[in-house]
Length: 260
Length: 260
Image (cartoon, rainbow over all chains, first blue to last red; front, side):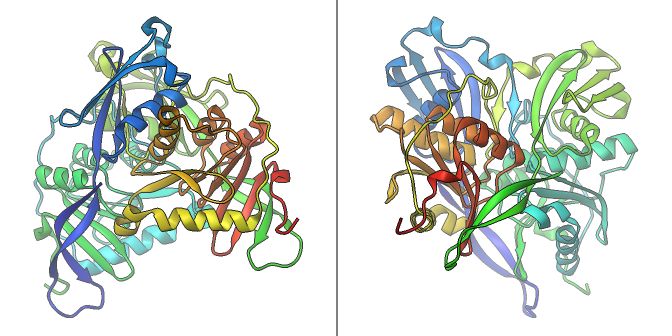
């Protein structure tokens, strides 16, 4: 469930050079559940107890009522697929796949995993001090979070200040609201920076590249797939900006020393 | 984006009686996006900037490329629906609804919102001291969280100890893994308690009632819909168990004073 990635660590009050080290990130895995030989759903998850996950999902959804409804489970970990054959295939709800409900904190991405992406090319740079300031402004603006502790925030920024801000109980929603506002009000996202309170999974990186964002900054940690995708797609990923430090995961050349 | 609910607050070191007060919780709202007169998806979100959310979602999914693809937006806040007409309906990806990908932290629930639920009836009780102990054991067991800060944990418990434990980058997945293990290994969930690190939205309460769980305990905050559903479905909801205090939201009769 864990993975190691090389990072550059920068301390707010550090005078020395940025420190190269290794960081532990959580692994992200895509598991497709095939129900009676038909793709039902793909879950982004941690690669452990995958049979339990698939069965628990089918149970929570009311698709199976218990163990007696399951005839066979075949897990192919390399392919990221688990096939579940039910005792009476005709009996399981047929319309399940036709209705999509996407949860409050949650991943969606009907087509998020097509790889039809450009690589972000940008000369935009930012200093560590500017990053700390943007995160501080994000936290300061997050009134609903202050009141309840239950929401995520996201913002489009230049290097100096927040241009568009949103809060939502879903970290994906907060980012979609920012980009939706840009689309409808004609604000260009090119060369701009996105700051978010939430974890950076592969889906968040996909959203950023769709809007051609060169620098993605999070208060939280990324997943291993988030880091890989950011590396592949030309995005500078900065995470764990908190308690006077930050981790640079990818394309670190866009982070320039204060005063340079 | 906020709502008020009545709670009972219990302090770990408090000697006096439990305190009745009002608590602020985050609002949860279901928005169905209709694309060219066809239901595309339902998002659980915060009820604010809904046009931006819908447009941002379509943009991130690659369904629209920009404002020029949108002919009309009609929001019906009471119905929880937003209709978006595109300039060239034939042009938008047709297969989007047929492929479901559910994100790492995220809500799913193809059929979670059917209301075909029993009400949980149970004489199970638990003391505040036992609740603090269970949350402490959950945190203690969460090794991946310790290492990365990036995962959720969930457990099935009796009043004394954890029986089944799971971690996952998705809070729904962690709970599904617990219930899946119960289904496959024949562990009964009746009269048992679920403890989770994650926010309790309506989807989590739906999962709990499917497994007939009388008491649901979280380190985090619930949403307003999570509280409403727990009240309706007979579940005792305890949240924000941290820093020596906890909030009782619903069916507080199952929480009995230590020593009683």
